[in-house]
Image (tube, rainbow, N blue to C red):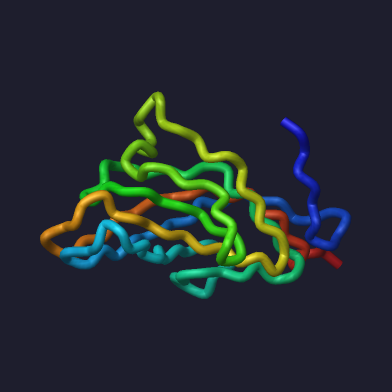
Length: 148
């Protein structure tokens, strides 16, 4: 696989991996034609957010998306860059971590000032409000932790 260029603005960024936690709050009788914005938490976000603008000196490479158990409401999940470009979408319950044939998302790259948003389209309308949880692995290149 070809190397992805690092554009964080320093020669030797601090590189670390993290697992982000995402939640989808699905209201009762949610429409199967209306996308729901998910919230997520990473090391860099100030708590749970519905979108995140990467600051100068930070680059994300999202390398995996998965669920730990079957979710109560299945549907499509998609990762959006800058509000317009869908980088990847997949069926949520096929992303079960124990599924040996689960599809893997391609590496999704976000550079400084890019905006990450995640949305969900339910396949069925739940009778009661529920929350689905998913995870995504990020390799982070960070120039804000430079040693002096």
